[in-house]
Every structure is written in C-alpha cells, then in structure tokens.
Image 1: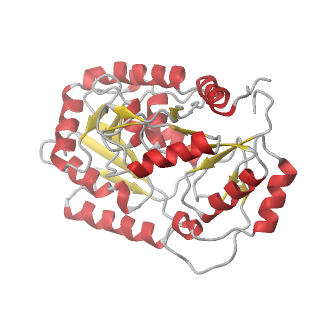
Image 2: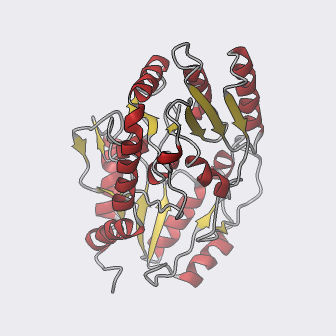
Length: 354
C-alpha cells in the first residue's frame, strides 16, 4: 500500500483479538451450514461461499496478483476456479517448511502443478523445522514474515532489576495445540519456581478456549503457583504489544504450530523468545544468540532451556538487542516487499514496480 498498490484482504472470518488498523478485511459471503468444529477456522473451511457475490467481487476488483492462503478451504477452490478461468496470476502462500528431510510424491506433484503447469508461484515464511534440513523443492520460494514494531515500545533493559524474578510472558489462544500446561509445569519446577513469574495471555472466545482456560486455572492451583502465575483471557492487541516491554522472556509451549507470529513480535521489541523446534517461526531464532530453541513437547528440555536462560540472565539484554536488529533488517516492510517482488518477477513474469 505504501508503494501505491491497492490491496484488498478477503477473509472467511475475523478473529476475536485481531487488529486491522492497517487493512480492514472484506468477509467472504458464506452459505449457512451446520458447524463443522468449534473453531471458526474449522467451521469456515467446509462452508461453500456464495459463488455469485464472490465472483462479482473478484470481477469488479480484477486483481493483478492474488495470494491464496493455503488450499484447504472450499473458498480457496472457488477463488482458484475464477482465477484460472479468467487467466489471472496467483501465488499460493502456505506455512510448510521450504527445507525438509524429505518430500512425498504428493508434495512434489502439487508444487509442479501449481508452479509449472498452472503458471503460478508458491512461497512460505518457514525455512525449516527441527533444525536445518537438507532438501528443498525448486518451485517453493521463501518470503520472510513481516513485522514492524510500534515506536517507543522496545524493551528497556536498564529498568530491570537483576535480583527480581525473571518475568516470563506466554501468549497464545487457549487451544490444545498451544500446550499452555507444558509452560505451567515448567515454571513450577522446583529449580525454577522461585526465580520466575509467568503471565499467560490468550484469546478466549469459544467453548474450547474456555475449557482450556479453566484447565489452566485448576493446574495453577494444583501446582501451588497462584502467587507466581497470572492468567488472562482475551486482551486487545494494542495492550499485548505493551506487555513485551514488561517482561524479560517469551516462552511458547506449542507442540506442532505452523508459524507463531508472537516470536517475531517479541524479537522486534527486544525480548528473547523460547520456542519449540517444530514451531515454524523458530527458524528465525539463532539459538543462544537471539533466543532459545528446545525440543517441542519435551518438558525436561523446556526446563533445561529455562535453566540456561537464568544462568545467562546477564546476556539477555544483548540477545534482545540482536533479536530486534534481526527483525528490523530481515522482516521489515522493505525486506518483505523485495522478497515478494522477486517471486512475482521470477514466477509470474512481471514487476510490481512497473
């Protein structure tokens, strides 16, 4: 948008705590149907859009490039059908790793169909999972995530008293895959409980979320951590951004998360993150230098990583500064635009600057 390109964001639903200060989404007109799950993501994946209004929307706007998020919802199929019949350019965005131990024949075929046969492009913001991997597909490109921090909210390490407990922040909706109980059990470990204070903030907008929040409350009581843990439900995004400056470490317990944006947010505000190695955005962390990476789902591994963070507490300000510098250089709006422009030029055959 800053380059003068008109941009529209077409979404199936809007999350309870999403911020749309830069771009307000247009909602896909969906057909009414029975619920297919508790989460809006699940409910809307198997809802067909109203094809007439959707295709009129696309016809009126006539996008030069359409970025399709994943390819698992009926809406994606309807949009792709319109793009192909009208010979419009497209890019597929997924959060699968570019580099992997191996690729199945289905993955290889999908990449060839999307890029070579249909003339589109395919990009991901995830380089690898579980550490660097040896193999990639030529058809899949890497474009980094983008995050530009609000000015004046960076962590002020000079105001931190090193004799106080380390203030740990955990952010993520109260869903099972976020694995908040893992974080609670880790900070309750006998070697850590007197040295850490945890704040857990998560979206709580569905029955699933409410059940997980109650489970976390019960677990806090069972662990005798009432005076060491704060649990919060849905919090406005603007307030969440200020929380980074009030904490010393971000910790995620996710087992198998595609790509957690909070890792980049914490790094951008100068707070070192702690992430499981299966989390897609863990590839943005340089272990021991800009944050910490542990084996996903492993309580002992997380406890040992938090021990290391405590041993290296004096290094955390420098780690935070390096993390912030990395995001400002590699995940800025300018960096994203350069990477996306390169994909458009190589895959779709024209320049965004024309």
